[in-house]
Amino acid sequence: MRLAATDGRAFHAGLVRIGFPPGGWVPLQSVLMLAVVGLGVGYRGQWQSQTGFIAGGAMFVVAACIGIAGVHCLGTNRTARPEPKPDSNLIQYGIYQRLRHPLYTSVLLAGFSWALLWQSGPALFMAVAQAIFFDAKARREERLLGEKFPEYSAYSARTWRFLPGLY
Image 1 (cartoon, rainbow, N blue to C red):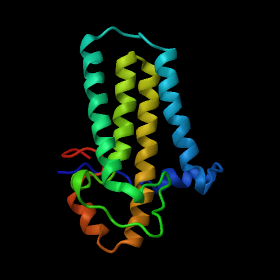
Image 2: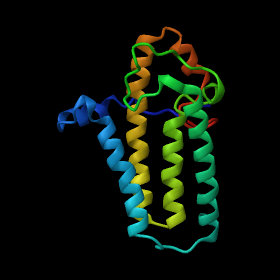
Image 3: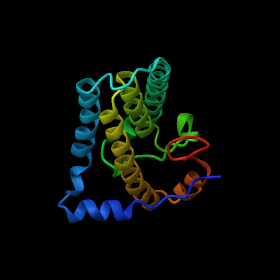
Image 4: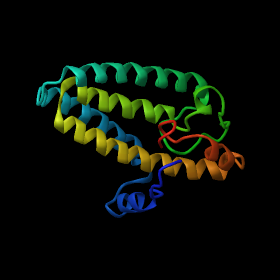
């Protein structure tokens, strides 16, 4: 059973209201990723947990594997923006059989794992903010993919957005 969530339109509308430009997804994504990294290093060691450290390391390896698989399958269709390239194809094989957004999943897992590795509360907070951002970006991208590819609706009904079996 999939968890219900808002469709992200309210979040995106809020970004537009505060002056978020349509092409601003990539710069904001970069700021969030750098914030996770910087806060992890700058506010490290806020707790001591060998289990958290090991879990963070294992999660980082999983994040890398998912990201590499996603890049491999996506090939020349890859773009940092939510808008699909004009000459793109809908990829439904490899990791894309299980996840609609493996590259976002990779970045999200890497962010959470970084916070666990450095044992940093502020980095963990920014990883949560990054998750909210990528959910909104994925919803926008899915709307655009649905407009471009008639088969996207059936594809999205049988695959998970970020985490198989959860979301």
